[in-house]
Image (cartoon, rainbow, N blue to C red; front, side, top):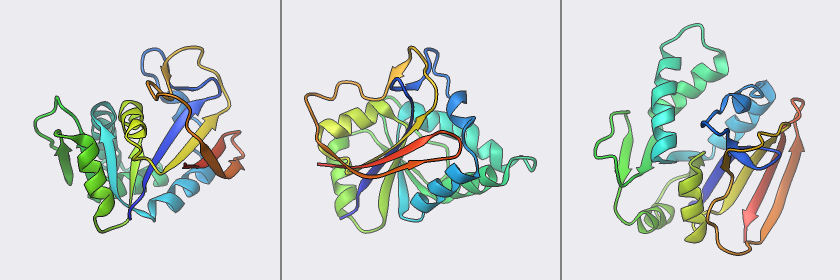
Length: 190
């Protein structure tokens, strides 16, 4: 069975975006070492899951990176990877998708993700999308959390988890400290 892996960047105080949706703080720490960690994960993935907002952010940013020859090598490579990779977007408001290899999942999202997990292929990776992640956590459909904790506080903003009822036992699989001060945590969801 395919796994759903959630990759998320967070501040030490548990926010995934600043009060106005700012994400610049996460990109500031994306050095070669963190990119190598991401590349290791991407080798086990053939489909990306997105919530609407994160999909639109990625769609507005990554194709332009690939068209800009002055972009950093890791960003260029990631832009090419994400363009050709299958993307599934959970949204009840979007009606059409324009980014290549994108599929809309607007009916029973939990059932759709469950079918994807039972299908053939490599793992499913969810970037960002904290609202979708909370929904999939409630439905017991996330198998692994990869949380990169950045060495800063935001004070306020969008929390890592929202509306995940009750306790959830996690099993720490790996903890790694990067030169940038980011701590990468990898958990199996019990």
